Length: 197
Image (tube, rainbow, N blue to C red; front, side):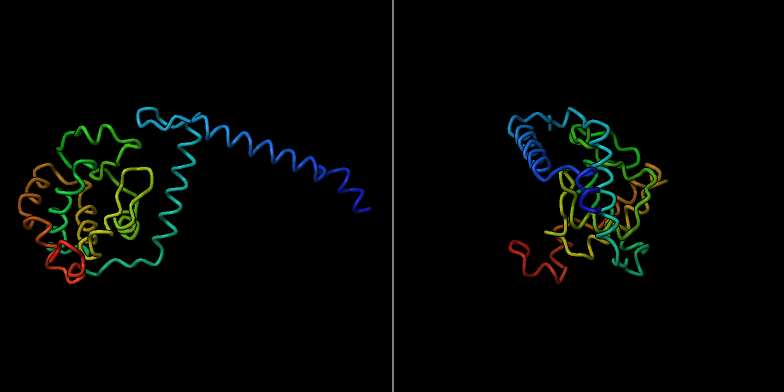
């Protein structure tokens, strides 16, 4: 009785094998002939963009679980250090209050989020993104060259950006510590990285 039901209601193994082979051939042709346009000036279709956006958001949320921000995240020292790092490393793409779009920021796809706008990411998610980067988005993995304390400094500053006036932004950037390479040399984690001694 059960086998009879399966035969009537499910396709045969040979039908499934032929269908799978057709799908593989079509997928291989799709890739080989470059049918999908990956140019940064040709946006994804809505379904592809929605799929990639959901994949990114869920991946960040899952991988950022268990990351605990430092208790002094809102300290003026962290924010000041983060301001200097942000000005050197982030403002070209993510801009800032009163900062006009750069040639780089206009050419990115997907567009880098303007971090002075309201954000719904947690501090842990921001830390994870800065440390590990995001594939196919031009967001680098700063954790390859920057230790966690400096990444938390960037997070501290980024969390203050929304609602910041252009004048306050300029003041924080101007009063930030000197060159970030000098800051990095003082970090114990940087002693073993070539060129940082």
